[in-house]
Length: 474
Ligand SMILES: [Zn+2]
Image (cartoon, rainbow, N blue to C red; front, side):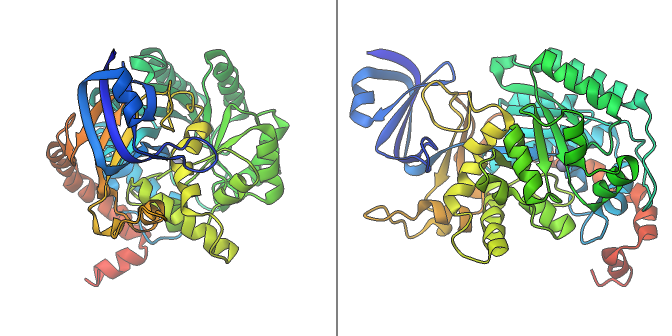
């Protein structure tokens, strides 16, 4: 008998192995030093392994943890303030961004990370600046991180239509220094739980010189470039004014399209552009909730998958999308995929579940360690509560209804237990490595301060919600 750290006993498990979602009945998982060492029928595991700890998950549904491939956690302190407005980036979020202190951003980040974990996310895909407190928190609570340090030369202010962004290269230099600090401290360290990536905000925000430097460093440091790409009409206008080219053709002209690049959103992309990205090995992240809410557009995530590309899902930010809940993203991904094609077949529930797990891991270049329940990968596993009304009645024989109910009906709170690298972060809805109430109280402290500072700008911009609030109608 071989002694391992943990055995997870399962009845209904989806591993994501193979081409579907890898259903296994009555299999157990043996875990040692954070890694999965065996997945086999119950009797075989019982014959070969004993464990310090045996977790009975036979009354739950067992899945790999979700990969939230694109987030801006620091926006959580502004949740719900930048809504129902046209020109979201310049008129809603930019004025709010400017009034947040370093500590307020950090408190928001911790809340967003906790929210994501409590909704079953095991890999936090954060993107931004001043990331040290967030990465420290991810490390402390034992989650996995794929962290992109934002780099931009464009001076951060509100620009009017037709105005080309001002570049100051020293801004990008400062961001690259932040990248290096985090890279040296965390990348491929800490049980390989945290990867540090370059996060140029978009090729409209970054000078060609800085883009070239980032590419050279990414190759040398063996990391990825995580960049908003053809995000909206604003970006297209900037690129055409500056270069006379859209972003994808521009990047192709500077040899930027290859497997180092992860393109976020691709909202404005044509089929030919998507084909070019797939051909060049560029991965993508699709954020259906965020792009739907802030732009009213269905981005082409499903199309790029159908063309054979690696596409993950992301919740983006909660001052636009309002939540970090991958079950919500899966539902919207399937729903929008069907609406766009005008049929009920496209973008099935199981395909969205793949995008929230193994396809997301492939898109981020971490599928060697996570994204599926596979021998040799780390034990990043969640248990789903089958007693929730959204999962009932439960059909197991001869048909099964788990995955359509999970994707189309379940709330994020259906996630009962979260394990990362073999360690429990939450058990039966109780966080074990963080105090949620403390995080919530902490972020609330900053809300009043931010509200007072941002109010003059909010009234000046006078969006629909501001107009209604003035009349006490909202
Ligand atoms: Zn984003």
